[in-house]
Structure formats: structure tokens, C-alpha cells
Length: 276
Image 1 (cartoon, rainbow, N blue to C red):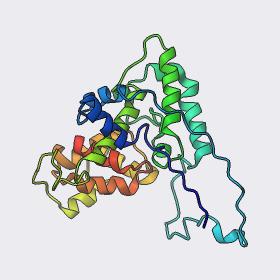
Image 2: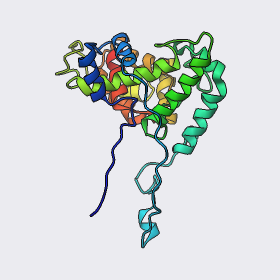
Image 3: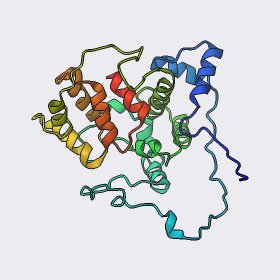
């Protein structure tokens, strides 16, 4: 078969191996966010988003043989909650335009800690599902943010700005690529070895929003129903499960987030649970 395969780095601004090489070349560390930001500044310009490839139309003898299976065919239960964040590049680009391009002043003054976890509509962009599934180019998002930032008189800066959130994403991807056993406590050289408990009954009540603590229960029920919760809500639920109250293993919480989050991302999920 005469098949020519072309691979490009597109899920992050730079490939982790590029960061590692630059770290050696510039003698810069990257295991704290501040150190990583110094390394990022030494990387040079971010590559331009790749254009849409021109491909010949595919033809099949049986068009029905290659249709996307329905959720019912994949044995998923019927959806009862509204579909708040439909997938696909068209929806991603619409949301990018609505949340970023058309709100330059909001982007200019954005500070993530000042957003609200209990707002009736999300107080952040909710672009994370589209980045996670590859429906939105992180290079395109970065390009749009940089255009607004450069035109602004006094924009907010990392780590609280929207550009800072993109850099947090890059940071956790690099940690996931370089730290052994990044998704576990045992064998992970950078986290504390804590004798967490694994009480199935306790974890189940937390997972199903049955702890008796209204705020925590509301968070977990929203997570199951909608697949997305604000980052401060994630922090509250995670803290409650672990060091804050229940003293259950963070690995069990990470599994629950992996199951329900529509923006689940291996590096970010495990990185944030460990950061907590």
C-alpha cells in the first residue's frame, strides 16, 4: 500500500521533547510553574495553526458501513440532561469566537480566581472539552489570546490570565511526560507518600452526591448530569474527598473525574489532583 503518513505536534504548543531539549540547552528547570514559564519564554515563537488539509473525497461501496454508531448502539444509557457542550470543530470555533474574540475586554481583565463556581451559567470559557478532544487547536486559541493581550494597555498576566491557563496546560503535559508513575502515588518521586484510605462506601457517597454537605453534593450531581464543573468546584470536591474531610485516596477521586468529565485529560486531571 502506497500510504504517506505525516505527523505534526498539534495537541500542545510545543512537543514535550522540544521542551526537554530546550531545558538542557538553556539549563532551565521546568518542575515548577514559574520555572516552566521561564522555559516557555525561551522557546521562541509558537508555530502558526496548521491550515485545513486538502484531501480527496473518500468513496465506499457501502456508505452505511462507516457511519458513526449511536450512543444506544454503544450501550450508553439515554441522556436525560440537556446537551450543553455539543462536540465538533464547528461548535468549538463558534465558542472560541463568542467567548474570546468577541469579548476582548473581558479577556484583557480575566483573572481565574475571581470567577464563580456557583454561577448559573459558566463564568469561564468552557473551551476545555474542545481542547481535550482535539476539536479546537490550542495554537489557534493561543494566537487569539496573544492578539488581544498585545493590543491591551494593561492585561492580566500568568498565572491568572487566560494565557496563563494555556501555560498551565502545557506545564502539566510536560510533567506527565517526564515524571514516572504520574497517575499514581506509589513510585511517583515528586509527591508525598500519604496513608490515604480507600473506603468504598465513603467514596460512593461522595461520587453520587450523598455526603450530606449541600455544596459538595450539588457539585457532584452537576458533574454527573452535565459533565463539566467550574475549577473551584473541582477543587472543593477534591479537597473534601482527600485532606479536607474524608481522607480518601486522590487516585479514587481522579478515577471519578475521568469517568464523568467531558474535558477529561490524563495529564491535567492527575496533575491537578496531585497539586491539591
